[in-house]
Length: 179
Length: 222
Image 1: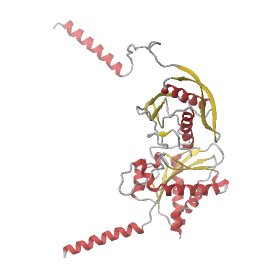
Image 2: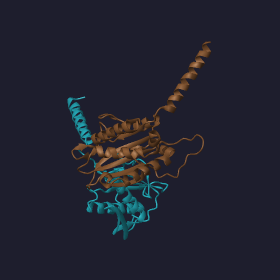
Image 3: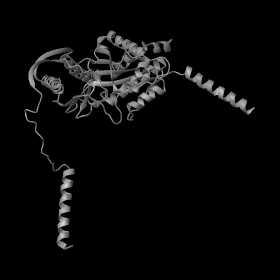
Image 4: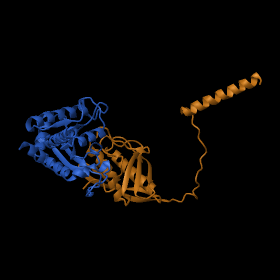
């Protein structure tokens, strides 16, 4: 082999190595072309509907009516309902930080609902009671809007929601723990 | 001869073990929230772990003095221990009662008391006669009735105590609490909301008085 070939091989592998390193370090990202569904292929429809939000404030339960986009897909509807509640709580200063829903999934047996937040909704300084009432508000709101999935599990970014006090590793009954 | 001596020794040692088990005082376990790794909440200018430990120590001293009770803490001041270790500790020692103590900063000027016991929402579950395998998260059902009754008694005591001492009292509530998971003896969690001004000694005295009302303490007193 000629020296030119060696040099070319050296340069190309060196460049490839740099690119690979940059990719694994997250300095560059490779975006593959996505398939975009045309409106004709999407078989779900959305229409506005009235929902009830229930939340705990000033030592009592409050209910509020609002409008959301109700989709033909139940996961999407649940996402809209819980996001509407979280938004109301944040606006009422009952939540100190804005929290949104990442993903909503339903188990194949239709008996467990997985709600994934984009961040931990609990404050480190909050009491057990305050955290419990936040979870109860979500469960009560779901129940008030005819969501009939018996168990709900809460996650953060698709990973189990960890809390020092409340055991979030297992599912919560949609009826909650209020007597 | 050797066989006879061995049999006498075996019988004697088992008799001794049985005597120890029946006459020794079963401990009351206090689990102050936080440890060397977890500081807990910030209350005023202090960490929760320091406050809960001081409080638990005061309760321990008072109960030992007044009722001659065997009270154990799950940790020393800056020691680490997992929840599983605490549960194992309580189960192995066959504790009489397990109390988890947590504090938070109250938003009002009153002291707030919240009483919880462990529940998975399966309170309808009852033990079947004979040997059964019980998942760790259902360990509470072994002493469910006692736990509920004692938690109710404590809550009732705090509710009837003078308002300047007890403040707001809520509960008892059944919740899936991490700190009470897998504990076989009756176990509760007491969460106290501290206002800006409080006296730890007064709070400890109130809890000691409340514990004095419980059946096992009364029996020990008489």
